[in-house]
Image 1 (cartoon, rainbow, N blue to C red):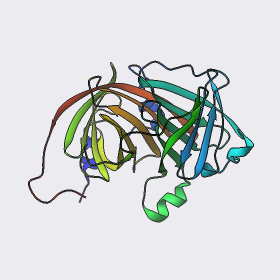
Image 2: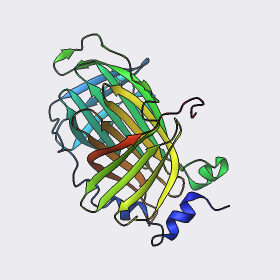
Image 3: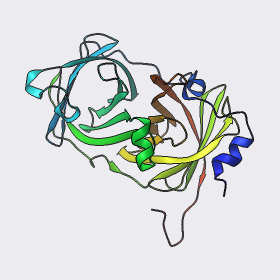
Length: 282
């Protein structure tokens, strides 16, 4: 029996590569923030992550959690970064790892609550992915707390810690990333979501892919997906409060099999939601 992607693909042209659909997907993204002179240190359940920003483009970082350096040794790697202040005091930072090709580390922290959440994305070999039938890009999630910044030691964290969330299950939203990028998402369960392209080079295409949702703060949700059909994954911070904005990044393989990082972002338009009367999705 043909799956949903077979039917939707027939409605459009051939399946598009990651670099084709990602071009211009950051048109409506919030502006980048310059973190020059700032630094933060996070406690990720016993492991430390320290980030220093000597200028607007490069970050020095170290963390035994991700296999580089020890917290007491100072920074061990230097990589490009991009930062966005998604709310007052809430910063979204993506490290485009050149020191370790095919990997990215995305860090979110709040100076208001003292909470933090880190996503580590890695492109596996095609042989690894084929062996277990899972998407080629994997992601792991690491909640933590802010322990210090350039302003001094951080206050004790407040409010609930970041945690996996079922809040988006049943919701259906449209995402406008540019005049040429319009996508619909339906959040099906704690493990999968369904998407289709309404406008853009992927118009007529869609699929059901692996997804993960964590609640970071009131109205702020980390949403990550990992595609089956091509080697690409994404990390988003959805602001479903008053602003209805999303900020994200992609890690994937281009048509020439090269690892690439892309910035993304735009506006969220809720379409509605359903509730399940008895038996709930996984």
